[in-house]
Amino acid sequence: MKIVIVTIFMALCLLSAYGNHNLEEQAKAIFKSWFVDFEPFADDVFTNEDPVEHPASLSMVQIANIEHILETGKRPKGGAVKSGIPSIGAENVKKLGVFDYSSGKFIPREFADSMKRGKINGYELLIYKDGGKPGTFIPHFSMFGEGYPYEECYINEHVFKLDFGNKGFNAFAYFYFQTDYPYSWLANNGGKAAIPGINQEDIRSIFIFDPQHPKVKEFSAYVSPIFTTIMKNCLENKKLAQLRDALLPKLMSGEIDVSEVEV
View (cartoon, rainbow, N blue to C red):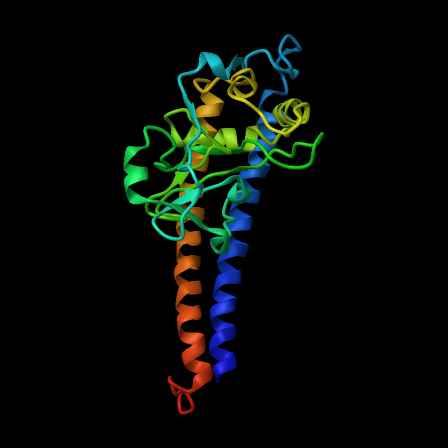
């Protein structure tokens, strides 16, 4: 019976993670169809005046020319502390819906209150800023929100937070940054430094599809609730894992008796 209960918890977590994967893959497939293969623009004239060939009617603009916030956070002198307010480092900017709570680090409450930059408000695009082997920079992106992974948290100096002021377009950018042109741009520029990493100019120099284009707006409106669902599922997974970890020792020690429970 103990094994059955533990298995149920594990199955619930896996089912939610699988559901998140499917949701992201569905959104990714539509993004690819519209903004990589350009299927809705099959009859359009294409231009190669920008870094990537694209339909002429689907204009591109540099991020520097779009209203946005791009910033990092920080940690106090001496680094992280054992408890306090969660501080997100580059090691936890992996992909949407992936977070390793065992590697969590913290900053003092007073220090967090003094920070003018770096607070995660939700739905900002998080970008891996620096780290790795010399000569190699592997871009990673993520997004948090809806209380996931924490109700309150800040990024450190090794993470960029990019916010266009529209959570749907931020989600659009999450997929866009993983396409060939922006990904290669960041990987190449980041790999040039002795300590691999990118700067704000590397990001602001990137051309992206105009957020005011009707098709971009349509995708942004479509993907926004999907990201909300994924984040809420992640939060439920966190609660299930906490409940499992709290109950498991009591089940194994016999403190909780389930011998007469029928399944």
